Image (cartoon, rainbow, N blue to C red; front, top):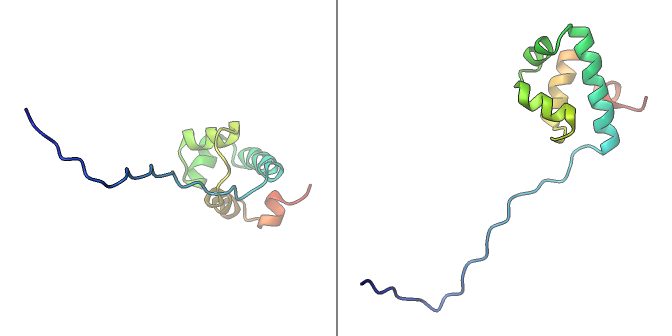
Length: 93
């Protein structure tokens, strides 16, 4: 049998996961997804677009389905792949 000493310290609070506020609004994300569809047409296939963006299939699929938020990194990669600026890529239609 083993005895365990219990100290008078209160239990530590559970750590919260870091949550970042969204970078883009829902409307901007919708317009970005449409821009990705247009880029897919320009590149000819989703595979070519994924290679140009250097992104995995599952990550791109999650963004396109709305399961994952649009990140700033992905927007920058799309800007480089398309040669367009941010305003042209997700600006007002």
